[in-house]
Amino acid sequence: MLADKKETQEFGPNLGNVPASRRHLLCDFHMTRDMTPGLLVSHWQKVFQDHQIPDAQDSSEILVSHALGAKTFRLIPPALSQRPVSDHQLQRIERMGQQRLQRVPVQYIIEEWDFLDMTLLMRPPVFIPRPETEELVGLVLADGHNLLSSWEPRILEVGCGSGAVSLALLQRLPQVFLFCLFNPSHPPDPPERLRPFGLIDTIVSNPPYIFTSDMSQLDPEIYRYEDHTALDGGPDGMDVIKGILRLAPRLLKQDGDVFLEGDPRHPEMLSQWLTRNPSVQLRLISTVRDFCKKQRFVHLRRS
Image 1 (spheres, rainbow, N blue to C red):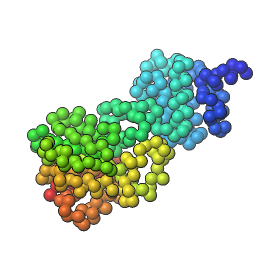
Image 2: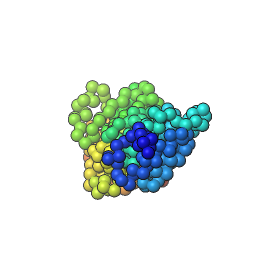
Image 3: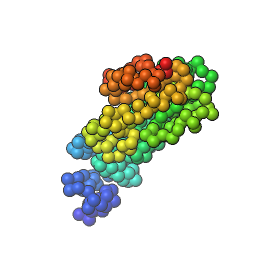
C-alpha cells in the first residue's frame, strides 16, 4: 500500500484537486510505469473516450508524441517506440493528459501547432489557426492578380492573430511589403499610417465572424480558452467585416483585392450589404467553398 501511495504522489497531481470521478485514473496510473508509447496512447485514448473528450485518439497520440520529442506518433523512432517511456516522460504525459481532461486545446498544451509548412508557437488566448485558413492563403496566392503584376506589391492583413497568414504569404512572396493590423475591432487610423507606403494591392482577413448568439454553442476548447474578441463578430457576425469593407476604398488601389474568411451564411448577406452600400466601391468576384463544402471565403475587388 505504501508503494501505491508513493506512485500516485510521484506521477499524479494532488488528489484533493481532482474530481472524485477521475481519481481512479490516478490511483491506477502506477500500472503504466512500464508501458510503451503505443500502450500509453491506448490508455489515454480510453480515458479521453470515457470522459467524452473530442478526438480522443488524435489527442492521445499528439500528447505522447510530444513528450517523446516527435512531431507525430508515426515519427517516433522504432528504438523508442518499443521500450517503456522514462519516468520523466510518464510524468509529463500525465500532466498533459490532465490538462486535456479540462478541455484545454492540445495546441495550447504542447504550445505549438503546424500551419502549412510552418510550426507556430501557441499560447492562450492567441487564436489557433484552423485548416480552413490554409485555404485562405491558397486563395490569395491563386487569385490575387495584383500580387504578380505589381512591382513590390503591398498586402494588409487585418486581425493577424498568431501571424500565420502573414508569415505564410511572406514565405511564398518574399518580394511583398506586408502590413498587419493587430486588433480589427479597435483600429487606429490605418490610412494615415500607411500613407507613406502607397496604396494597398490586397487586403486579407480571417476576422471574428461568429454570430454572438452562436458563441455559447462553441466547444469548451474554444469558448473557455480562446480570445472571444477573435471569435465574436457581433449580432450578424459581420461587425468587423463591414468595418474592413468600409476601410477598403481608402486603402486599395483600383482593382485591388479583398479576401475574407467568414460564416457560410455571409456570402449572401455580403452581396445584399454591398447592394445597399455602393459607396464602398467593391464588387463580389467569387465565393469559395472550404474542404467541408461550406461557403467559407469571399473574393471582392475595388471597382
